[in-house]
Amino acid sequence: MKLPLRILPSIARSVPALLILLLPASPLHAQDSLYVLRHFAKREVLIPMRDGVKLFTSVYSPRDTTQSYPVMLNRTPYSVAPYGSDTMKSTLGPSSAFLRDGFIFVYQDVRGRMMSEGEFEDMRPYVPRKQGRQHIDESSDTYDTIDWLVNHVAHNNGKVGIWGISYPGFYAAMSLIDAHPALKAVSPQAPIADWYIGDDFHHNGALYLLDAFHFFSGFGQPRPAPTTASAKGVDLKTPDAYRFFLTLGALPNANERFFHGKIAFWNDLMAHESYDAFWKARNILPHLRNVTPAVLIVGGLFDAEDLYGPLSIYRTIEKESPGTNSRIVLGPWQHGGWARDDGDSLGDVRFGAKHSVRFRENVELPFFRQFLKGGPDPRLPEALVFETGSNEWHSHDRWPPAVAETTFYFGEKSSLTPEPPGAKNGLDEYLSDPDRPVPYTQHIRPSRGVEYIAEDQRFAWSRPDVLSYETGPVRGPVHAAGPVTADLFVALSGTDADFIVKLIDVFPDSLPDRSVDPRAVHPGGYQMLVRAEVIRGKFRNSYEKSEPFTPGVVTPVRFALRDVHHAFLPGHRIMIQVQSSWFPLVDRNPQKFMNIYDAVDSDFQKETIRVYRQAGAASRVILHKELSNR
Image 1 (cartoon, rainbow, N blue to C red):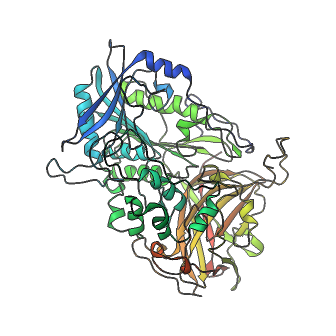
Image 2: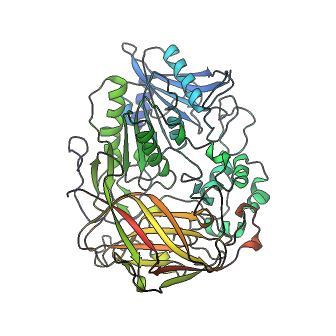
Image 3: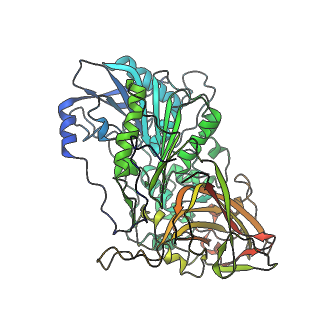
């Protein structure tokens, strides 16, 4: 069902257009900064927690004291800067749409970060049965903060809302557990849920090397005392991350050459290769029961960091707390793009309108108005999800919607077909070489970037260590909604391997160029990455206990790709690519069964990988196809 026009105008169905890479979103308008200076007063306080630790908090209150206002709270490990009661933020709230609407805005450095007291712990585990004031977690710190605010901040109306993106999204989600009675509305946006299964630094047991190295080289540095200064990370001293990490070699070399054992969470990463008690304690999903505030979960379909979090938190609340007023919005956004840019494009791909602006004005602000100020019910759907390809918003009464499975089997001559293979023998093979791993992007970059998640895959298609399977042009739109399942049958010459599966939309060769710029991407034949995911092969049956492959034995490897909502338009082709490296986004597998975090450079070896497409061992990908009238 299409979204009603009064909530968010539909975008006309059109073939996705291509463009030259856009500049980042422009800075916040100067008038917002001037408005903050004229209409808000700031004070800085240290709010005491139940164990005596005090958390640094900035409170921005409207100068107009003729009425009361709800509180909007943001808890962050990234700094509430600028510091000093005479220095102000350039804008306030989730977006500038909130600035003139009448709120008290509060920002807090979480425990152990920046100017707050105490010891910081990454994704601090929840304590379910607290005994005494010394048992604290992020839930209790949020509770104590809200209790202080409603009792000590003048002209508040007794209602509090919380929002946060990424790590602050984790703190927003934690506020839902044992929530304070004054907490009425929470929006976890790109929230972290589980750092091992699918968010940020691991996907299905594989380490996301590029993100982990860059993030913890700065963020993970020890803080001996409260400070207003943020630590800087390692300078690669090269624009080429691929070459840097290939030269770095095995993972222990990072500590030997750069970190020297001083980055505590990097050490934790290296000490916990499997899904053990350390990681399970940091999984917030088992604790999302009896949620009382209204919840608006937000995620980006092109989020390179935290798409698992919003999807899994939404599904968990729906299952474990069915009475909660919870909704989910998934848009055509990169990580946090709904707050940071217009949402009309990503890399080479255009989406037809400024979807971020419409979300901020027509969804996010009305949600908080309703529950914090008694505003009108915006009648948001249970799931508001953008469909890429068609560039349309759709409303659903649940996510994923009612779907049927559509299976595509790997076939002869790189074909992808709905017909299962009948032949008794059929396979394709490639040589996976850790010394020349498949790059995750065609661009030379020092850091990850965001465009790769919708990037043209023709650079990978041309490599001999990437298998590609492709349908013919589809006659009518093929609508994929929900998770995508990869079901492989493989045999290795070694004892371990990674598997990366990509779902790709291949544009018609006949699409005309849309730019006279000779550097522009040619849309004809563009292979748009729709979704990709990795699994570390030894965790194919259990993340808790790894197991080797037996060389030469055909073995099933089945795993889910994150959800999609995509239309393959008439004339387009559906492509699947399979490979065993995605570097340096994902660390290299030595391709022998061992603790990879103990590997040395000599452990890495070439490996022949066979992918079977025969009766009884039919590799395939399952699309979950939306059931609806269009």
